[in-house]
Image (cartoon, rainbow, N blue to C red; front, side, top):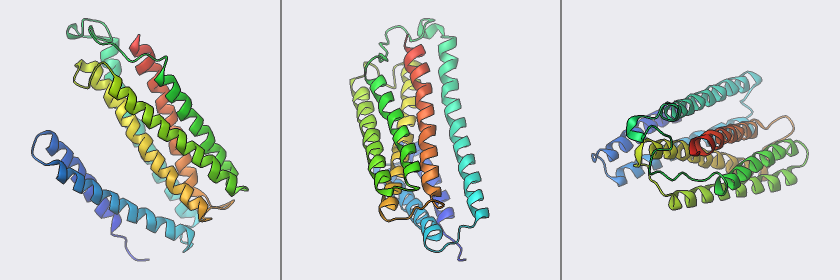
Amino acid sequence: MNSSPWPILTGFGVFSVGESIIGFFHGWNSSFYCLTTIIALSMAVSMWWRDVVREGTFLGEHTQVERKAFWVGFILFVCTEVMFFVSLFWAFFHSALAPAVELGCVYPPVGILPVPIIGSPLVMTGLLVGSGVLANWSLHAVKGDEDNACEVMLLALMMSVFFSYYQAMEYYEASFTIRDSVYGSVFFLITGFHGIHVTGGTIFLIVQVFRMFKGHFSTGHHLGLDMAVLYWHFVDVIWILVIVFVYGWGGL
């Protein structure tokens, strides 16, 4: 098997994107430089993803041992995502449980009008949880009814797009910004990074839809779809925590 250049290029790409974003915030880099690094990283990841699909679907190189290795790597990746959100929620609880004098000793701080949970947050919850149910339905349908699986997955994708739309409208209409005390910073960091994960999960599911149309999956061969749906459930669980604590308890 030939060595793949994509892992090392992806590593350099991730480092370059991080460096460019930090430099942009400090005025060292231009927005064009940031965009260039993001495009380069996207191309490297896409080529790597393409090769993995070819190896498993057409070349038959993914043995049972390699599939287990893929699962181990994927679970470790999800664990890193979990710890990332643990750090964000840690910042939230640090401020919410013991508000500083600068916040008026209350949370939300004095002068902050939080986003009410009754409204777009509940609609967004219904959309995201509903899309998770449909994605799981599609996973089971692909084992015997691929046409139905494609239709259900497309509906799940439509709901995820509407979720992103409602979140964008919520940001636009919010009475506070990320600069408004620790409340604004934590709120936009948690919901914003969750929104980024929703976008990534949506791309993940879109790829699976194309693979469904091309007949890549079968009863015993649907590893990519398994991982995509599991990742989408992870996104759902994080959102439930966001709704309960950030919008619900943190907005009282």
